[in-house]
Length: 140
Image (cartoon, rainbow, N blue to C red; front, side):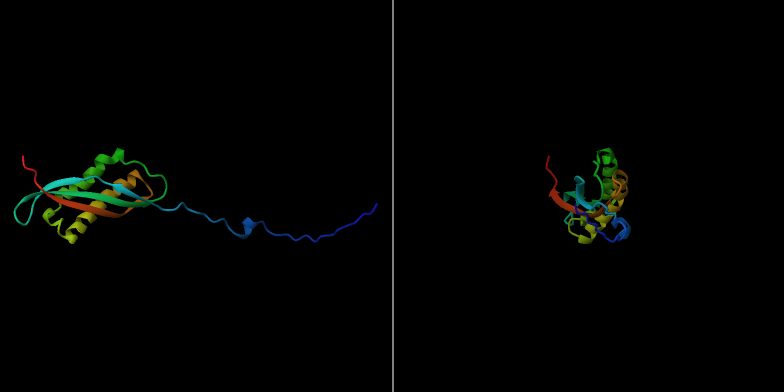
C-alpha cells in the first residue's frame, strides 16, 4: 500500500459579495401613450363664420411600475381638460397659431399632472400632443 500526502497552501479570499457591493437595479422607465378623449366648442373664425373646434389631446407618460386604469378619476380628468379648454382666452387662434396651441397644451398638461400623479404614482407626463380640427357647423 502506498500513501501519499499532498500539501496545498490555503489562501483566504473574501467572498465575492464583500469585494463588490450589490448593484441595485431599478426597473426601467416605460413609456405609455394616454388618449385623453375629444373636446369641442363653437368658435367664430376670422371671417365671422361659426365653426366647431375639436381638440384631441394625447399624453406621453413615462414611469415605473404597473399602469392603473384612469376610470376611477375620469370625471376629474375630464374637468382638468375641459375647464382650461373652455376658459382659454382666444380659442379661435388655436387652429392657426402654434403659440396659442402650445399655450393651451401647457395649461392642460399642468392641469392634469396632479390627477395623473394621484392615480398612478411614479408616472409623469413628458408631453402632450394636441390634435386640432375645425369643421363647419352642422346645418339643421
